[in-house]
Length: 277
Image (cartoon, rainbow, N blue to C red; front, side):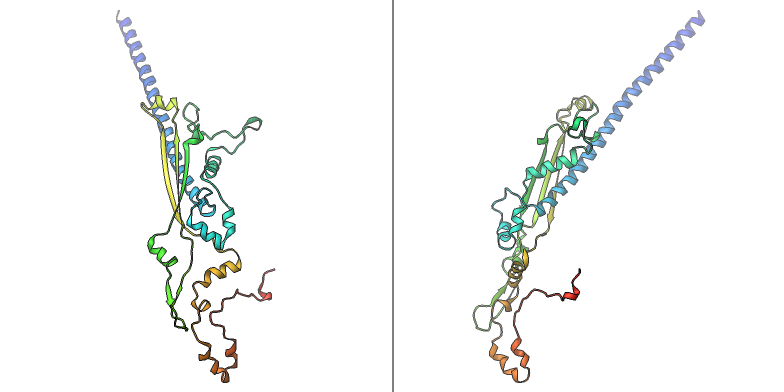
C-alpha cells in the first residue's frame, strides 16, 4: 500500500513538472514573439525616418509637378529654365520609397517581383504592409522667413548716383522657396490577425516623421543668366556713380585712365596653358 502511494506521488509530481514546463514554454514563446515584433516596429520607425530624409532631399532637386503657383518657379523662369524640366510628384517619390524600402532586392521565382524582406512580415508570415496606400508621402515648399526675405527682395544697400537721381538699391534675387519639408507616414499591421491574437485590441502600428531642409542647390543657368543675376548687386554696373569729366582730366598724367570701365563685370578668362586637358 505504501509503495503504491509513493508511486502515485512520483507520478503526480512528474506531471506537475511537465505542466509547468509546458506553461513556461508557452509564455516564453509569446514573450519572444512580442520582442521580435517590437524589434520589427523599431526597424520600421528607423525606415520611416530615413524615408522622410530621402523625400526631403529629392524635393531639393526635383520640383513638385503639382505646385504650379510656386514663387520659386518665377525665379527659375528667369534664371534657370532647365530646373523646370526636372519635376517629380509626391506619388512618384512614394513609389520610389516603396521600391527602395519595402521591396526586396532578390527577384522571385519565374521572374516575379521580389518578395518582401522578413522585417515586413508578422509572426505568421503575412505581410505587415499589404497596401501601398498605407505609405503616405507629402512634401511642402515654404518661403524664407521674413528676416531673410528682407535681404533677398528688398535690397541690402543703396548707392547715390552721379546724376543726382534716386539712389541705386543693390539686390540679390535668390529663390525664396528654399525650405523643403517632407512627411512620411507608414501604417503597418492593419489587417494582421496574428498581431491581434498577440495583443488584444491591436489595430495597427503607424509612425510618421517630418524632415525639413533649408538649402538652395540651384545656380543660374549659363554665363548670361549668372551675369544678369549678380549684376543687380553691383551699383556701378547699373548706374553712373562717377561722372567721366571728373577723371578724364587726369589723362595728362595717366593716359591709361581712358580704359577705366567703372562697374565692369566680365566672365573670368583662364589662360589656355592653365586649362586641364
